[in-house]
Length: 490
Image 1 (cartoon, one colour):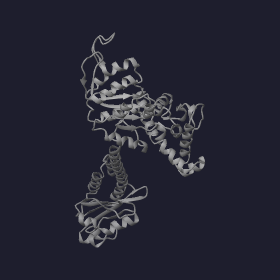
Image 2 (cartoon, rainbow, N blue to C red):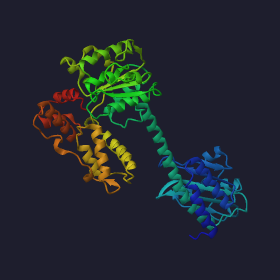
Image 3 (cartoon, one colour):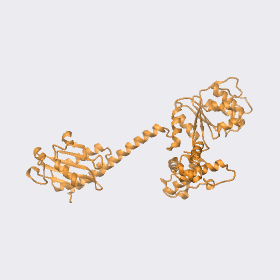
Image 4 (cartoon, rainbow, N blue to C red):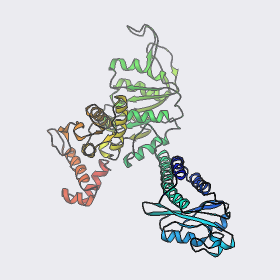
């Protein structure tokens, strides 16, 4: 097949143009327009298969009645059917004079002089056909024009498939985005596990109200991140978010930090100072590690929650404040109440809505997502060209039980980015303290702790098949169900 120079140059220019068009409908119109221009024809259409094995349907046409096109009448149906069956191009350059392929009655009826029809093939698979014809003698339908059309059809097939794939990806992306925002709707929270779905749904329900929220969970699960997400996605997002770590402030300073003081209230109080609660006015106050607040200060916190007003140290009058309270703790406050270390009335004031964040070991699907998120973050900040993880590295991350939760995972990824010397994080770059891996029994561990570790490890080994887990551990299936519920193992 020898293509003239003018066609070769046209093919080079055309290839660049059609591969830059991403919308399928516009691409098909342009493909047809180019074919008609190059062969100086008046009419044409493109048929595409919507699904493999089905008859192609009209997707673009020029100067042909769409109704006739769909039934392939008023055109040379013989030519089209032959191309579909043989997957080879055909050419009729003087149909009315009897030259070229056999023609149908429709060719004579509609005075069609020249026909070119070629399959759209991609890796041997039929995508559809390009058909053009002319009633004029000026149309340049010869073997060279058919060779051009065939070469052009190969380029067009690639462009069409790319546009289809892009459209499918966009459609899937929109569906995923819609589902993501419907369920998760918090760009600050990186999660896709079932264990986090209930958390995110509950977060969505508390955005538009002022109810007190208490966030529970182990150290490092991201309680402050959840609190910030609630605030910055809620109706108070334009107002202050003030975070107080109750465990980090010395007991003798905590009251003045929370409630503020007047000048002269104590030695060193040289000016008036607003407390954290007052600074959070109209916004959100996040009380982290609320379980560490001493009993004497718990009384004042309770009064504030009841009256919604504060009194600075050394002041004689109260100040009303409009503050939403979000508290957090890694302790079991119900047990703290029983032990006399936490006031029962304050507990019930705080525990209006509880959001429990499961530990990372109970949401394994989140580990790769979080790992890539932290990798991107630290690779950018360190200006390193690291794009992902080797399979062994991800397996190592997935097999570890993460006692430090998300915070430990973030530190591990940051360290791996520092250590890495290639584009992918390797298993050797993942430095983890293996002294406390699941299954290792250490002095001081309770029987319950050992049982939980063993149950979690066996569930992973048997892909969550509870019957096999019960058989392997020598316990009843009922015991497995009961303990999974008690320990909130997903």
